[in-house]
Length: 103
Image (cartoon, rainbow, N blue to C red; front, side):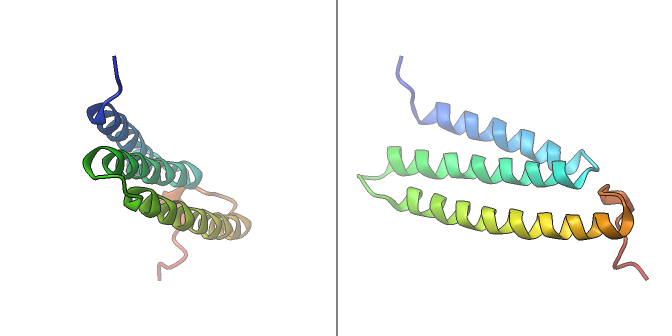
């Protein structure tokens, strides 16, 4: 049995669904960030799979996936710095209890 495009798409959809649940269903900010990273990795799998199976040999999907990885790394660094600052001030990282911008 060979691994085809549909296998990668199903894997990507499952990972994206798990990431979406982690983002929307949890209150911990770290788990929300992990869910977002999982969704970005699912998108990377789709980009690389479609680039491999639907085009003549080209690196467009791999290049886009590389950009997504760079943006995800920058997003994770900034978000973790923000979460650490909020934890120092509020002593919690639960998303429901963070109301710093509220009047």
